[in-house]
Amino acid sequence: MTAPKLRLGVNIDHVATVRNARGGALPDPTRAALMAIEAGADGITAHLREDRRHIRDDDMARLKAAISKPLNFEMAATEQMLDIALRIKPRAVCLVPEKRTERTTEGGLDVVGGHNHLAPFVSELTRAGIRVSMFIEAAGEALEASKSVGAPVVELHTGAWCHAREIGDAALAEREFERIRAAAATARALGLECHAGHGLDFDTARQISGLPEIVELNIGHFLVGEAVFIGLDAAVRRMRAAMDEGRRAAGVKA
Image 1 (tube, rainbow, N blue to C red):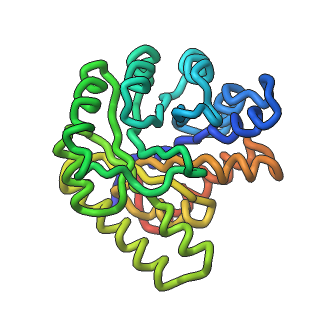
Image 2 (cartoon, helix red, strand yellow; image 1 turned 180 degrees about the vertical axis):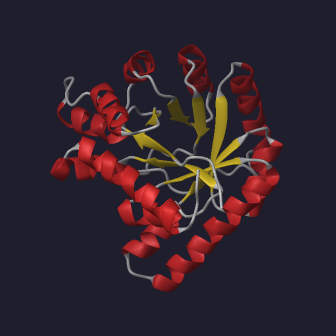
C-alpha cells in the first residue's frame, strides 16, 4: 500500500501560553518553531485567537518571516482574522470554531449550518493563493459541506477518540477510531486532502498514522508538555519516529 509522506505540523501555541503567563518575550514561539523544524517538523501551526490568549499578531508576522517551512494559520471565520491572513499570507489557513469560554478548540466547525457564512471566506483566501482547510468532525455531512464551500483540505478532529483512550473506555475509543477511519476514506473519495489533529500523543499518533488517507498530523499541546521533560527537539524527533513506525506497521509506503 502506498500513500504520500505523512507530514508533521507542530503547533507552537502553548509556548506562547507559557510566555504570556509571566509577560515579556520568553519563551519565544519563533525559536520553538525553528527548533521544531530542525528536529523534523514539516510545518508550523499557530492559532491567533480573538482574545490573543497565546499567539499574538506580531508572532504571526515573525513566524512568516523566520521559518522555511509552511505556516498554517488557524483562525475563526471573522473579518478581522481574514484581514490579518490576507496581510500575512501564510501557506495555509485552517478555519476553526472558537468560543471565548473554551480552554481549547471544542469539536469541529459547523460547516453544514455555516455554509453561506464560510463560503466567501474560503473563496477570498483561495483567491489570495492561501490553501484552506476546514477543521471538522469525522462525519460525512461535514466532509460534503467542506467540499461544497470549496475547501480542498479537511482536518479531522481527533479529540473524542483521544479522550476515550485517555479515560480507558476501549469500546468508545474503538467506535471513535472507526468514525475517523471511515471519514478519512470518504475524504479521499471526495477528492479532499485529509489531515488530523487534537489531543494526539505518541501512541495515538502511531495508530492513526496507519490510515493511508491521512497525509498530515497537527500536534501541539502534547509536544510542548513533553518538552518540559525531554526537550522540544527530542519530543519532535520521537513523534516523527512514532508516525513512521505507525506507517510501517500498517504496511504503508511513501
